[in-house]
Amino acid sequence: MDTAATAHAAEETATEATAEVTTEATTEATSEPLGRREENKRRTHEALVEAAAQLFQERGFAATTVRDIAAAAGVGERTFFRYFPSKESLVLQQVVDLIPLLGAGVRARPADEPPLVALREALLELARRHETNPAILLAVPGPLQLEAQGRLDVPGRGDRFLLYDLEEAVAAAFRERLGAAEGTGTGVEGAAFRASVLSRAGVGVLRAVRLAYGRLSEAEREAVDPVELLRTGFAALEG
Image (tube, rainbow, N blue to C red; front, side, top):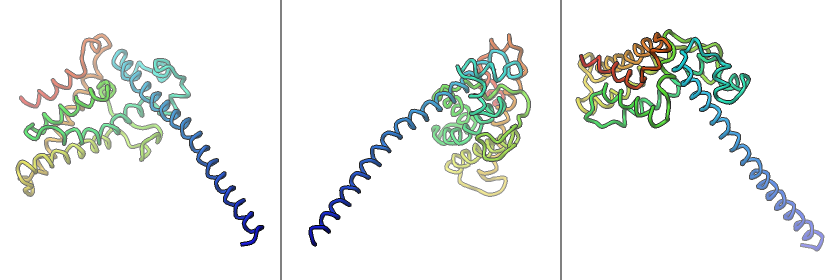
């Protein structure tokens, strides 16, 4: 290789090395702010959910406005609407987030626990682990309907469909527990049928508790612990 070619090759190598260093430096410079932005978004989301839960418990769902939630979370109304299209969507999103976590929680319970006990304890464990006030799930006495797509995959997918999704997720976890203990079976004698019945009974408790909680007056709500209300609801199934 002649001198000119050697010099040209060295120049290209130096240019590529400089480009790599520049790219790495740019990546490092931008990844850190992006990480901070994501963390700030997560904190704001959690602050809105916690503020809403507290206000729903204190004042009731109907008496709590988006402005109230935003103010309690330390943000403006415009920030609230960047996360949730409505306060109804905020509640529904908690149900959406709960579904896979609850299914996993039921599967993780001790194998000798009856299915409904496993569901109750999985739900309460989720509330403890994630520091989620159950009031956020009990706030609204009637059916909910989304006003906009928000974070959900299907626009307008409201309370009725989400409750079905919840029932199906719990039933799938119950099937695994019952199938392991009793064998799979077929038809109405099988684990799948029992799991479906028990799942809908358990989710029915959640629906009944939500109705009861949502109908309480502000004064009555202050005297009620949502966790104990859930326990009482499940106890009613035991006769």
